[in-house]
Image 1 (cartoon, rainbow, N blue to C red):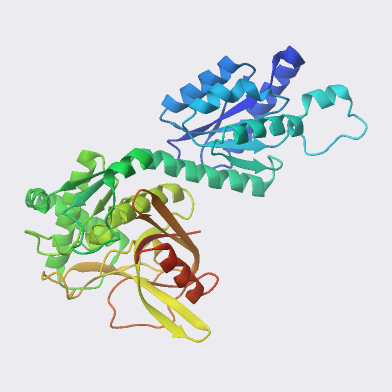
Image 2 (tube, one colour):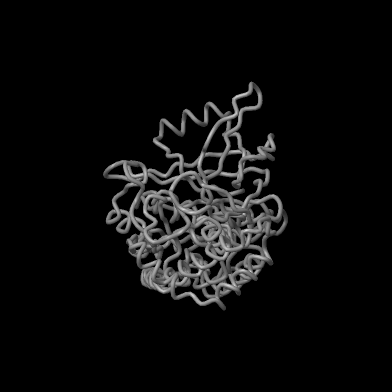
Length: 444
């Protein structure tokens, strides 16, 4: 989060004279400094813009500054909105229109025309709002007193979404092999996704991964095993299987880092030269912020990485997941979310265990994996699908619970949840929208 900043651009005009403009700048700087202390990212006061040229220049600078994740505008006084047309038309970063004012209350006995001329955000922000609507410019409008906690929380939430946009524009996904055969929902138009969202999605042969795995040193494997011991409980005596997962993880991380990739996908149908499907390896990579999608679902892998970036500094828990089966007991209807192996330990309620068990599919050795129960709480599940000519982002509110059954013979990570407002309504809406079984989830 801290590698990004947001710019505060204040609107005014020369009509009010230098004293008023100095006061506006001083107050804006104070507000930015105080808000920076409570928001996820720094808010940097840039300019009190009074001309078309100033506005156009700061919008151009925002576009080309990689550290700027978005622009927050506020009209302390009245700022004629025709001055904003060129700049807003050119602006390519997320935009939040913050409708606030410096003072909380109207000072009964002190208010006069000088006060009115200086403190007319209610006037200026409506003029500013018109030009946003007139230009049909996507924007977030947040109104309220700048020192109120709920207002600060809304700005923080918007900042996290804007960070997701910044991460999306530089997203690179490494596909190890292709999609699972005959599966439709994992397909998609990679060219259109790059044009619209900025994602670069490319494929590397599994044989390339195997070659890098063979070059991993024993010292590197031992160091990775030490990191496993710090984070997880070793609940198996089949250490060779865990050593192999460490080798897989090191190799995948090397390849992704060399290419600048933040997400990856694979499928159990394409494991040429590999002894195990990456389980523990994929889970531990997700715990470090990498995105993952099973069955070759590169859309879900990218979304998982984006949600992880958005959650940094907060709860930060997000994972790849699938709906597997339902519990349809009347009054206690739940979905069991899990996967063969690859659920991120960030959603674990307790310290995960490393276990080794047969997989049953893939025709490979028994893979090591992390086994745990998910923590309870409110969350969302998200999936991006290609509808042919357009993308659809599906989002659903859920409430996670401690699994109501021990399920001692199910050796995978598992989460139980109820879709809101009910399981059946949630399932019907998800299916109607074309939502897949694979999705990323994030706790709120």
